[in-house]
Amino acid sequence: MALPRRALLVAGLLAAALPLLLVCPAEAGTVGVNYGRVANNLPNPSAVVQLLKQQGITQVKLYDTDPTVLRALANTGVKVVVALPNEQVAAAASRASYALLWVRRNVAAYYPATQIQGIAVGNEVFATAKNVTAQLVPAMVNVHAALARLGLDKAVKVSSPVALTALANSYPSSAGVFREDLAQPVMKPMLDFLAQTGSYLMVNAYPFFAYSANAGDISLDYALFRPNAGVQDAGNGLKYYSLLDAQLDAVFAAVNRLGNYNGVRVVVSETGWPSKGDASEVGASPANAAAYNGNLARRVLSGNAGTPLRPNADMDVYLFALFNENQKPGPTSERNYGVFYPNQQKVYDVEFVLGAGGAAGGGSQGNGGLGWQENGGPSSGSGSTSGNPPSGVKVTTGEAWCVANAAVGEQRLLAALNYACGEGGANCKDIQPGAACFEPNTMVAHASYAFNDYFQRKGRTIGTCDFAGAAYVVNQAPKMGKCDLPSTV
Ligand SMILES: *[C@@H]1O[C@H](CO)[C@@H](O)[C@H](O)[C@H]1NC(C)=O
Image 1 (cartoon, rainbow, N blue to C red):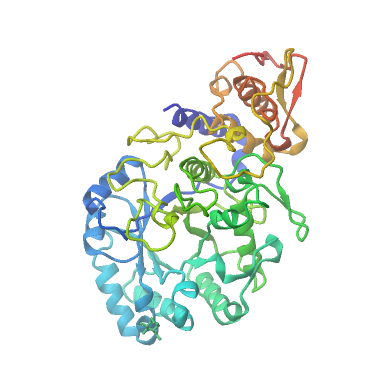
Image 2: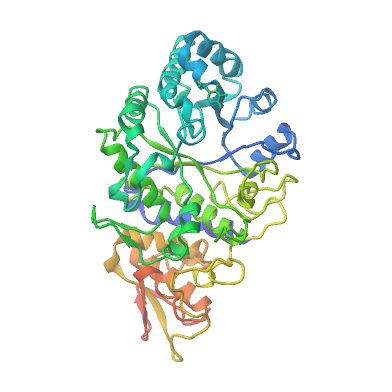
């Protein structure tokens, strides 16, 4: 697999070649995984822990406090979010003694050997356990008080995953607002609690659902973090280049309506894309799942996952899910969100650590060759609406090069550069420190090098020198210091 190598090179490029930019992007976030177990064919927990280690996965989120799982995770260094299930929310809310006993038995009994760092109190309560909505924040308060009593409140944070359906409106992002029955009664007290306890808001966000239901209106590239023309939000003047950003900013907009909660981070407690679905589930495919999860992971790991409203936010995400879960009810997609099959083979390739792990595990679909102009191809089967140019039509018969358009700004150049050197498959080794085209050490020069390599590699076909407006074609050999951009590869 060549992909991890390239990703490593991009990481090196960012760290060594562009110190200026290091000040801007947030610190890298972590890509964790949801270890769901609604299946009858999963490996035993100690085998799963070996798989996590082999993949470099350092954070997992559970849906309960299963003792065999928590024991298997002991002394591994893996950080764990456990859950108090919806069925226990009412009891934890009404009796402090219940919450204390629960924390003693399910958290204190394993900590610190098992590095429990968070408790999800309930899961999508407003959507799946509506009748305990009013008990949710009181339960969180009691669980926190129990942690405090046991001296664990600094180490273990209390939160509750909120589904996007908590929003009454999410489009455009600037119009984001919580449902009226939740805003003042639940979300405001929850945000106050999260701010007071130094915790974070957990959000479960699935661009897949929005895309799948509106595939005629939403571009697949926009949903999959691929270069695209962007979507302007007339309300806040910001331009969005990914659906996940737009969804998260709708949450931030909704939060901002309730007060100043800038100190409350957001953790994406679930996100993912199914590798398989029913005929009606437009967009479900291994290639799209690989692109969504792979591109998201690269953004998070390289510290570029901030949104237009919170550009410097370092983002932790938990992919959903570790395994395909064969006992989940609902449409086919529900049983096909896993990165791994129960036999531990990869459903598709995703890196959890920049430059590592990609070669591990067999059965990979691979995503290294998935340039964005191919995404209307046979593997996606999704009816992309992104206006992809016809493949295979050459831009010009004479010599041609592709160069960066400085006017779009460094942020967009960086995003396109990461794409070109990562998923796009450009060879970026010559712009690494010490290599022939490291100088001039500027974003425009490095991006030009990468865009041109991508363009030449794709046979200079139409649409392969655009990068959402970040690049354009020239017909005279560009000069970049001593570096000549090749007109072939
Ligand atoms: C909420 O509804 C569930 C399922 O119908 C029920 O088992 C539970 O007792 C209810 N809880 C409360 C607090 O009303």
